[in-house]
Length: 267
Image (cartoon, rainbow, N blue to C red):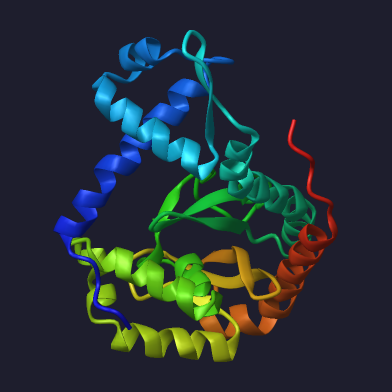
């Protein structure tokens, strides 16, 4: 594993990227945008804008129409939203299998996708579960290293992706990211999760436990699916024995539907 990037290195990289994204956002508001309007919209100095526009043109995201009309984004920017469209496809595919699971077993399911250094809940069946005492958790973000959803993702994603995520987490000084700064124990845990096929919520004081499995498309983890239950209502052995097979079956069905559904053409 490569040594993690330092905070200084990360800080140096954030500035140019943030400015380039600000330029793309400003350009995306109009069919074409002159340099002076970009300057007013972004507050960036014109020499900086010229350098950023040159880089974005070289990358194929921006083209210059004329001196008077200025610049516009190209069709290539659509590729930047591909991940968002994929997450929407995963949610659409997950609604049916998740509803069926909760109708049969009554426990709620949560679908989470990777969002930076967190797992974000994209859909849940809490509202339809008579056994849930939690509020609906749409768009709630769970720390990747302290959730069953996060551990399932890390255990089943490709090695290169896992290393990249852990290096990014290691740059944070937060207590919750400590395992990423000394990952030997974490990696052993992830190997065990991969062998057994599911992840459990790491030890905590919460009244709830999650049992999570990956939603796969080949070697890619599209999302993770978690059964969340009260500790006093079920033992881990009971949850695994009664529900793991159906939970994995639901995850496979979601992955199958996503893999066979055609990708919509960009507008």
